Image (cartoon, rainbow, N blue to C red; front, side, top):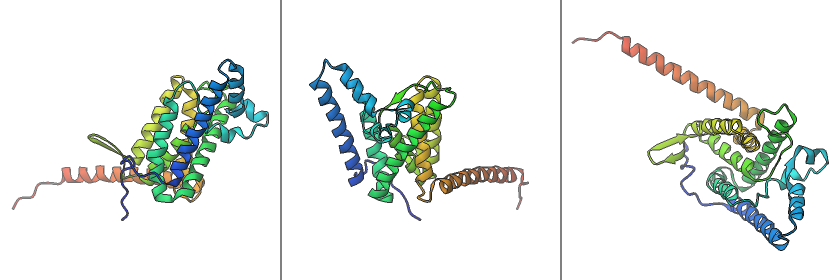
Length: 248
């Protein structure tokens, strides 16, 4: 039986993860240089953001390139968003690249970015419980969360994350992340939460490499098997408790 190393054991980044990280850093440096080259032209920076950000209005206007550009640019308001995305890409991307190879890792990253974008656009188009309508997003967090979802799927019942005295398997981590994003969405971080959920869902669906429909069916079957195992353990423990003592 194949065993997997912990996903957060500081894995060695492969060429795909290194390329993604370098590309995101290069784009961010270009954004910073552009902003400093024309510090008084705030409208110019805003025009660049409008050109690259994903929004329902941008798609309706025919700017289909925003499906790609939104995932490689980041807000200049702070480094935290970029740093967190790079950290997730390195830790979980390196783990999944070691499993499936560089080409499929890049494909998974791109598909997760598109899945997150579609989730955001759907939330912006439908009646809007999370306050997404009329908004625009940038950042690679949806794609990064897709890598996290893929690792969760491939390590469904094995260690995915180690926190001092606690180890978390893939199914627990996925459930915690989904719950966290639902709470964040209810508290006002609607756009980010929807993108993260879309990325996680895409990563979970594609991780098996057998297509999203088959992968979702596998996920459903795994959840059913887990529930059945828990019921069998409960029944077995009751039988043991009710068994009369033996005397010899």
